[in-house]
Amino acid sequence: MNQLPTSALLSDNMNKAREYLRRFRSQVVPHRIGGHPGLSDQTFENLDPSDNSVLCMVASGGEAEIDRAARAAEDGFRIWKDVPGDRRRALLHQIADQIEARAEEIALVESIDSGQPIRYMAKAALRGAENFRFYADKAPEVSDGKSLPTRTHLNYTLRQPIGPIGIITPWNTPFMLSTWKIAPALAAGCSIVHKPAEWSPLSAVILSEIMTEVFEKADLPPGIANLVHGFGETAGKLLTEHPSIRAIAFVGESVTGSHIMAQGAPTLKRVHFELGGKNPVIVFDDADLERARDAVLFMIYSLNGQRCTSSSRALIQRSVYDRFVSDLAARVKSIKVGQPLDPSTEIGPLIHPRHAEKVLSYAKCAAQDGAQIATGGGRALNGKGNFVEPTLFVDAQNTMRIAQEEIFGPVLTVIPFDDEADAIRIANDVKYGLAAYIWTGDVGRAHRVARDVEAGMVWVNSENVRHLPTPFGGVKASGIGRDGGDYAFDTYMEQKNIAIGLDRHRPPAIGVR
Image 1: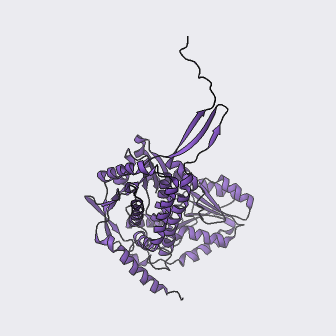
Image 2: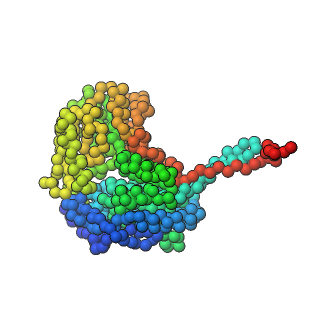
Image 3: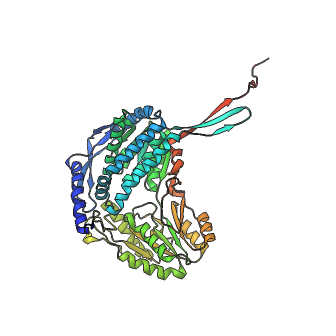
């Protein structure tokens, strides 16, 4: 069968998206608390990033909604924590089945809602199903502990779910990142209250519907999974402060993470943060430069540059700097900016006009600080919507704002370095430490630099390729805790030690005369 031309695929995608979005446009998008859709006294506008028209109206949660959701999560937790692991596994696989069945809907809705190109969103929806399947298979063994015998006692450990979890997720690839938090929390036996980002709330509604349907069919309390829309300053703050919520899993920028820590302190809230990054990609002169170039381009310009692990600082050894920068500039100029539902689009609109203005402001910063703008730096598509040109800053110094601050857009800052020690110094001279990428043909150098760079994750001669059993998270201002594998359960479960006496010895006597 011949593939349809791009124009026909775009038209088909637009027609399907229009149908999927009809229900969101026809009424206020509700919360889902204890399995029931609900509204609030307040609403907010959800904008279409392509033209900033009102996509739909969304209920804005406050104290009453958060309290109801937290109490519903308490009720759900009392049942869910005792559901056997084999049954939890089956139910989470059912959720994954439904995600796969609705993958097209999720991808098209999220592409419109977030501005992300459809070429990436289809994969993001399926990765969400993969997350649920991975943690479904963990559920039967999640409580297993260790046996630690001594001569006098048999010690053994158990892992037990901590309680209701508040999950606050971001607006970039929101569906996949929501499943990345929700799946392990449910596998652990915790209930959840999910507050999605107000700038891209719609795919969270679909996920909530799927989970509610699965739990209701299983005759389980719908309060296991709850959804409350709203703003971080109100709904997010109230969720963090609520005494029934035992932990907060948050993905977002670092300043918000520090606010959440302060808000959760009075209730000694456990926190799990995946925060910002200013990730270096270090290219040595002995690297495969073509592969390195392609990886650099993919990791900063895919997903509109709105990803925490983007290679936003390219550190290039001086001996190959001019050649590498020339190749980069030529490729960046050819990147296609367009409508997100167009299969040929490589960069869509940024999420919100406020964010687009922030990203655009860095062109002025670069010029003021003395960096060169090799290409980009302005609005694309005649200024309509939140479209920003793919931008390349070159000849930068690491002290510049464009090298220190997380821009979170299709913007790459290129910095030259002299030798291995210089590269490590520049890489570490930021407040962040999420990811790093190293390109070299020297195995010894790869190990040395990977050891010394301050990052929670390092890829050598590779872009970011996730392997679900491995730990994912950052150091310094880039996060607390780890996702992935069993590491995620450190947030959602408590360790308990049980000691059984093995001999008949008496305790030391007290009060005996």
